[in-house]
Image (cartoon, rainbow, N blue to C red; front, side, top):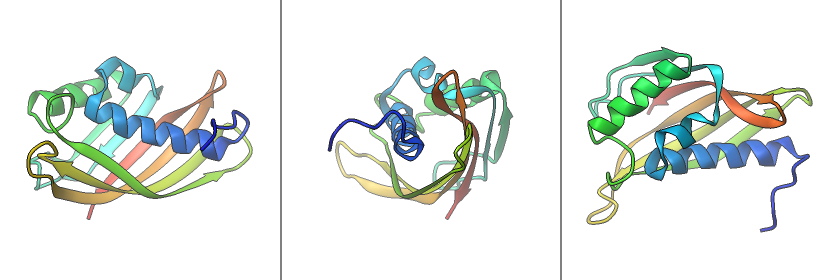
Length: 144
């Protein structure tokens, strides 16, 4: 596959969503957060499989606190042997600076020893182009 066409918002957004999944597993917190708008919203229903409570976080500082808490508890991040895998990604780009995307996700644990599926769900995202780059402005995470 060739390089992403910089004028194709669907390809750019699909790449952004993949990058976010990769960074959740292996990137730094700063790299991960650089893909969000300053006023981003991150909402999640409870995930009994990981012990994560329902959350609603507004703004990068609150989102950062959530990321750091999940990493501290071993739910995600470098060294946790976890993988976020996206599929059936559908992007709707209006031709302006905002778009939406829906994707199913699967979350695998123990990937270096006995990989197993831990949970599944759906991301409903709103994306915004700022200064020429697409960023995540809102993510609603639904389990199941």
